[in-house]
Image (cartoon, rainbow, N blue to C red; front, side, top):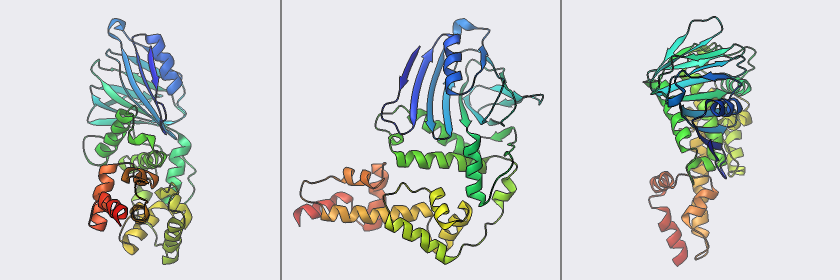
Length: 332
């Protein structure tokens, strides 16, 4: 078995390849759950898997090169599957099996056994473990109140269009980028936001017990609470802010925070964070001593991991590229 651990990644990443069914079973049991795994065509079997852990979300992209059967006797997390090629079926307890493909993803809930069947040899799929506590905490943030019952996801959701397609695409990109040296997953700021985006997106892309509550209009947020959030960002702009933390500062639900910033500030909460950080970047570039720093160093220091996107945002905001601001400081 070849197994490589990503070095220096904020999201712990691994890559595995093996032709041994026993080794594959051991790897997948370690990364996900204790399971039974077998194949009727062992000669063609070859596990190829990329796995990345972002807090309470474990994303695996894997193929087996053969038909497989799997059985997990005790599922203690939520679980999502989303093939990009091929197809298979999933089922829980005595419930009928749900077919999944590149058009239909599958959802599994905690506390019941989990089985996989009819796995086509050409199948390449995302398989995603989502900790129960992470889902419930995200629901509480979005709803602004306690959650006392499981989400009870419906067994299938659309991944070929709309929100489901967007969500599956994001998860697939994360799996593919997990072992990319110098990639965005090396940034703790990026990883924290990606975990939150995955959790929030999953709850908005699927049907479950709390979906109607999430779709209901959020309550109004007073201007004093908006100011409290803005003051917190201005006072500590280098904090690894995400929308969940900002909602906690305001003591409101995430939906209430987002709607209040849209109506009162004319931007998203994280858009405001980026605006404050851009101002600090501009100040740092203007005050830089000749040869003392680079645009890349300053951008990374203020949490802008994607340099091309940062440069476009900077030019749109200030009417010049960041290199010109820094160049002016060096010749001033």
